[in-house]
Length: 146
Image (cartoon, rainbow, N blue to C red; front, side, top):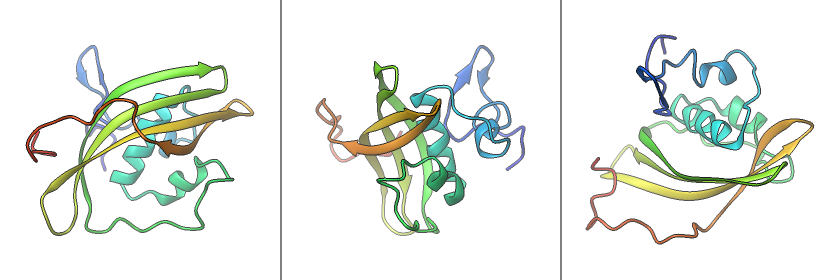
């Protein structure tokens, strides 16, 4: 991915879509720590899109981290929509989102998740996922069409 390409997480700024280098590239390639849970979640989405399992594992809380991850071959990530970001206290936050993707075979699909994050030693980590608090969007089976 070129550093000037639009970031897969879809974050926008004053002039439109942020480029990868100034958005999630700071975390995936330059080693900066995400300043908040939503930014970490966006960078983890980008890591899935770019098949950067090293980053995913490094930003996963050790007590919930899997030994390894599927390489994601055949999955194309189509877009991310952040629905909610709640700071529960100084060291805990939740981010609800919809991630659209297409597997190697089959139609586009949507994953709706409410992720929990914890901050340890000043660094945000993905903890786990819980059931979203709100009802999933309706659309007559058109998930991923947008």
